[in-house]
Length: 477
Image (tube, rainbow, N blue to C red):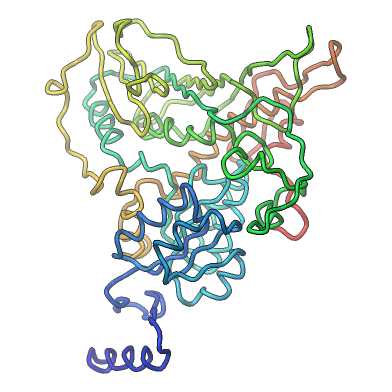
């Protein structure tokens, strides 16, 4: 088709429809570009983080937002006002059926428990996908999602935006310059949870608001009566829906050490968790909810990048790593307020950073090394840094599968998420018990040996129930 006839075709079709005519990139075929070279996007989850993911990808009109999906009308009031041309749906399945031929890519910014089902349905239709962190709710889902992305050859990105930031690249350059030597210990902490957690499940049985489709919100999770204590943010502390402090911040804080050291699959994991006592001697037992605090230790083998075994320790709920020797006691580590932090301890020095790999520093001989004395930048940077995470994915979608690098593709984000969720597997195993009260026996409080290839704990069978959850009838991957 000549350029002239193609323009006439689009013009005539637009007039016939008497509306804005969208031609998705995949319809035009190889060698052609969509009108104005815009990516046509569906955003699933329009409130909170979904709003920013969609608007960042929209990029002030550089791309088309064809449709917005959310189970709660209240959550999309703002984005519907800002993007009035986008069609609105409550059910992602109906939206994909109706708009499948009009879109190129899908953004998934929903609660953790629905990430996998939505992403899989989009990828089956060969849509590029951007999925908020953590990539999945459990280890099995993370594995399957990554495999499906490779099979369908779609462009993918997990929403841990710090992976596109300058900080992690700076840390890689310093490490590659041999500044801190071989790393043997990594310490990471967060002040999360900053929502109610470690409490009994709140009473339910309330009337469902007319704006909300509660059954769709539950998705693959088992049915429970509507509970306003869960929405729109506090679902994070309940295993049916969320992944706790690790799921919320692990993909942000653990990304720098994973990228710097090249670590991937944990060898084993163990943990301890905080207890709440409302009665003397008998701690509250709330297996359906995440604990108020935890400490998780994972071991990794040597890698090509770091020829030394690594012990990685995670702290949350107000716990934090001890201040290491070699860093002045008056220096704040990590974020300026110390709420989140990362420490990599090597044979020659110490490297630290905060959330998203920001505020990177190196310490040697008890002093911070001035930045001008450290290796200079040489790795390419993402335009806009962490703020360019969405647009990097958009440009990669336009280029096509395998044509452009992204910071957190599922080939990386899948195994990375598996490792993050290993901590939750250990926490849930830690809470397993036989009996009740003071005579209860906690049977899972041990180091769990991990077979990553087969996704199995090899020395405590009961823990394997947390590798893969059961889906509610009518929901599948």
